[in-house]
Length: 309
Image (cartoon, rainbow, N blue to C red):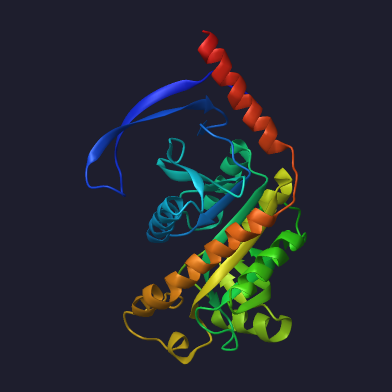
């Protein structure tokens, strides 16, 4: 693994959180693609830019209330997007830039590993396959059927894509403590957003108890397994494929797309709830890995050598 001495760059970019172009400076060690400015123990991913912006604003509010500390907005030159570092109860956490789909999620896990992360948590949306799982409730995925197209490059054929059970159970416990309705079980990870075989999916639900369909979990579990990281995936049920409206062919309506009028009033508060439950789980987590400390020392060494020069 090649580690370069600390470097500094200035780039012009449009900040989605402001209204004008400006110059930012990025310093760090170039390591497997990303420029690593700060090591982190935990990585959290979301799927949508709007959700990321809302959570970043939420973190800024929490910092003003002294609930979190050391908030740092960072630009990932490898992905050309924003990331956010912060501390909560002494734990270093990274809110990664948003992505959607298995191959994009693969890149995030790999980047999180480079930055020193030992645990990776997906906070996403999903379509439930049963009307017994209501809209805006939560699903904690313990395993996922691998139709994602990415996990096959990390796991042998027939090997299951599994979450870290103890970490996932801790997340579920925290969500229930916050009064959230949570279902735990098996998900179906697909490689396509707009082509869903409803008959096959409903059969999986009826015969095998598969709860939902989404696009990232199997890949995240597979890559994390290969890198010896812990992984968890929690989802907000933003649509129900088994509902009458979703199974009808309605002109101009895509199956699996939430009703946005309700999504922002009912869904976003639940995603913030998920995020807070995730932070509480991390804050109480006793896991002690080695990778974070190794990457932290690499950054400190690069900084020292650069200063000495």
